[in-house]
Image (cartoon, rainbow, N blue to C red; front, side, top):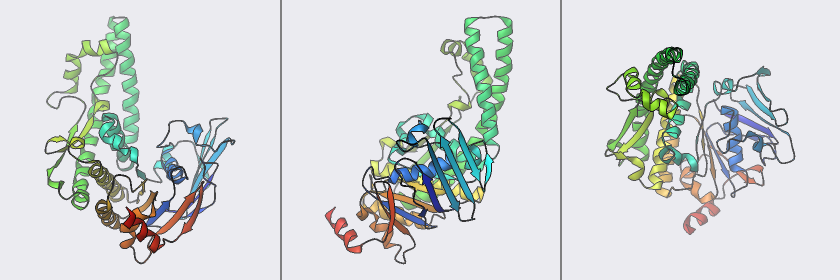
Length: 382
């Protein structure tokens, strides 16, 4: 799918005027604080029911107001909207006029992927960030994963409660409860791990294709290691039995599907220690493109890709490679930039104006066409 029109009310500093998008490529140019990231945040919120910038949903409402609305019209003439009342804490969701109560229904209708300057957390933020990235993609393509993951987390909470209870009061009843929830926990961990392993193998195939475009010099040297959350050579039940005293001491489950990780290696070393910041960003983009492509192929719904601050970390050669990759990506792309000059490689491959360009200032967004003399002048000054 693609967004045809976005309308917002009282979301951050956006002025609320309708924004009409190009179905393929869209550029938003403006200074820091102008509202570029807020635009991406509005789209991301509609797709995920949360922000990629803050956990405090109430901070998204424009100062002095109590409610915000984000609504889009897609290329199939459907209307998807979400509103949040700060006073009541209620979130209302509408799709073609019909009300829904669960945020998950939005993610089933619109697939949003994003790359921001903070996306480097995938490398430096620990396993939690990598788990979030993988599970976000799985939600879109593995239809059983959402319910399976909810059941797993329910059992995980029950087992953790039993572990803490066993630590405080060791009796046969507590042991019996812990044994019951451990059995459920092991079964669900295995099911979750099996789905994840399959997904990761499919993403690796897609990743190799995009690395060949964005980072051809390292493509053959990259490996991806999937760690299921417990030692591969042992059953989870055996691992838990061996580490029973450790878990009791910590008060929670130390092994299981919630502890999985995916490590990206270059010549068998952590990739973040081997690549420059610019190369790391290209790798992140290749990984995101891989997930976008796989979602589109399996779900038969084209995702929407958001890229914030395209100029950060990337030189003109890297941006040229990125432009070539985007040309081969079959989905709508929305890009923000501070300086018009960083867009020159993208415009060179779009001589027939197969894109829309916007200027953002104080939350107001106006469509504009690039001034070639300005672009060339800015590029020479860099």
